Length: 68
Image (tube, rainbow, N blue to C red; front, side, top):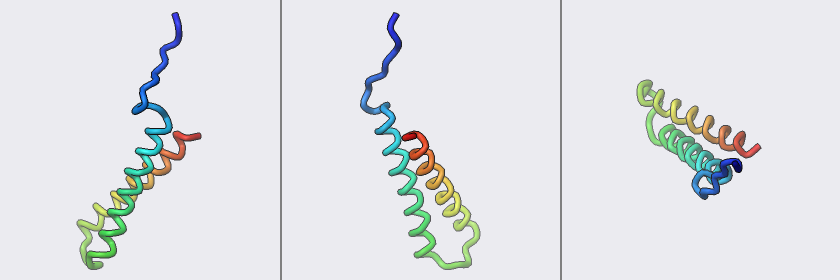
């Protein structure tokens, strides 16, 4: 029996890596926009922005790691 090969375009490593990087950059952009628009005295929503920043960084680094 031959090895199973998945030749689908959506599951190729390159497409997944690009999707991870784009979603990560969008999360980082959302967090930066939040920091620029809102005042400094909002601890609750600021934690959400920090979470988006962390998630975005993890997705970008994960996308780069998939490419190695």
